Image (cartoon, rainbow, N blue to C red; front, top):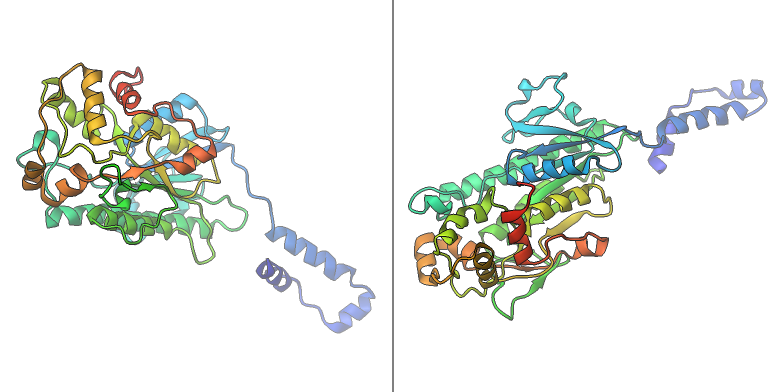
Length: 387
């Protein structure tokens, strides 16, 4: 506040001591000061439309989120405008564009900040899939991590996030005091908690957990990813940043479940390894709802675990999916085979796990529709809304 007073004082017209004496009063100087201060300290501008800009809008989560916004009909009590952020160069942007903007994840600043001046929230969902497939098991969409694959993942999630955060930060600086700040909601994952969530001794992680020393490629990736997202704040800019740690998203339209369904349909499903590794999950519907809930709840910031509240293991998942599909699950994938076929990726993503609690969502009042693994799978496979 002291800086505001300094600016207000500097904006006053200069007067000599003689002119003060001639006026016989200090009334004018105080009047000028009040006018100068009021021009700086204005209530935030109010917008009639709530605007969200979404990267990864064509993906599984982006599609579910846009469907949820459409169903709800409003965001923060206002009509919602959705802008799809599509990869490209900033030079392709047009001031007349209504529903699409190009952003460059390889640039220092992803797009000209002027295009974000009327955006209330940027929701960053884009990033290279950590288990996209090439080679022997292409049909199930998983493969080992090669050095080149790791570099693709790192570049897409960290470099792109830095570029987009820089654009949001610049927009918030250039908008001035009276402009509502653009919130930045960025995807992350429970891999930040490591991969030793196995069995009855597994540690239960909520958002207050110290993740500075957790191990694994995904833990390192997530720490740097969230650090990149956090760069939107600082240097006097207090933007709201939400780090959305998504569990495994269950939907027949994509992700792990879509790739496993054909195997389970023919009776080829079974536990992976011991089956005791915890499996943080969430239905696509509940994930979309929790993202929108976070947009509308200003008190939610920092890490947010977006996982179902009832924890499940790989064995629980396998049993529930078999029952929902009415298929046997008697063909396990042994630990040695996972290690042989998938190396580090298999150790972390298939044999490892995380026991995670969505503490912030629950304490803020969010209500899950699909709290258990059976409810989430039933929603994914049978829900009328095809997401």
